Amino acid sequence: MNQLIKNRAFMTLTGADFFETIGISLFNIGLLLYAKTFEQATLLVSVVSVATVLPGPLGIVMGRLADLTGHRREWLISTKFIQAGLYLGLAQLINQHNLMVFTMIILLNISSDVLGLFSNSLRMPMIQAKVTSNLREQATGFNQGVTTLMQMVGQAFGVTLLTMTHDYQLTGLVNALTFLLAGLVLLSGYRSLAVTIQPAGHQSFKRLVAQAKQVFELSAGVNVVGLLMSILLMNAVGASIDAILNLFLLHMGHRLPLSFSLSVLVLNTVFVTGTILGNLLHTGWFKRLTFRTVELLTLGVLSGIYVNLLTWQNYWVIIGGMAIAGFGMGQMNPKLYANLMQVADPQQLGSVTGVLSSLTTISIPAGSMGIVLVYNVVSGPVAYGLSLGLLALAAACLFLPARTKLSA
Image (tube, rainbow, N blue to C red; front, side):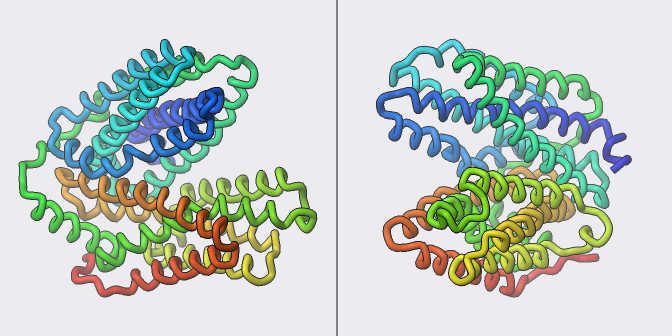
């Protein structure tokens, strides 16, 4: 950890993410509450929820654009100031209360999110270049742990700010300020972010897909189709589990050992704490665990939670399971991204990580809407059984043979 703290480039990128994450989390909460003030609240809250994940499938496009971009350091810094400008303009509109303004605000927010995908793909090759291979897993985990914690802080700050002021314009201004600070942090470490990566050459989409497949198989030691299907299925179930557990706790009623609100708070706190610990602990024995081992353990724990929902229905089993599942999820992403950086050419790293970003975002609405719909329309046990089936299929996908093996 001391080596990472002394790494100026890594700390510069992490510091920028620190401010950016606070602003995004704060404004997303503010935007939801703003939508609730309209007469068409239900419809507009749904629009905000969709708009939040809508840019995600563009991850592969923005990743490829980042690979084709020269002067990456300058573009990375520029995106933060552009995003600050977008939210500054948005803040001038948000106190107006009509559907035309609401639409403009949504479009500005989507534009900023697309720029965020672009800047994330720009920074990955910088971490690859500036952090030694033996520290990349720890570095990625530390960065994700910080952003996970700041998401909670940003949401809490956003709710508190709006409760005290009821001023939606202020949330836009604060978000603009956080992006401005992120840009200034990047400027302060400008020299440390220097990289010599030539823009990728133009090539056919077929060739790009072939290269991406090879990188995925080399990095995870798993068949690429199996790996991506497993991630997609696991994210689909993971996206719905919060809603499923909330509905389950609601139906438990007086059988809960705590009040409903406190039960949900404990559950969310335990899961987030587990995730942060999983992000941070990437040394010693934990570092030796392979990506497939961690994913299989996480799938097993999630399956155990659903078996409990079908049988014992014990609240404390759910709490323990979510803590372990959170820890596993906190371990998985840093391992996969570190392995990708180990084998991917810097000129294609943005495209490869963009594939992961797109897959994750596509699976989230499919899982959250599909499984929750089954719960509400059919029954809870059927939704639990469906989730168990998807988790079993995700585990089976990891045993498809890889055609290429990662060299020692």
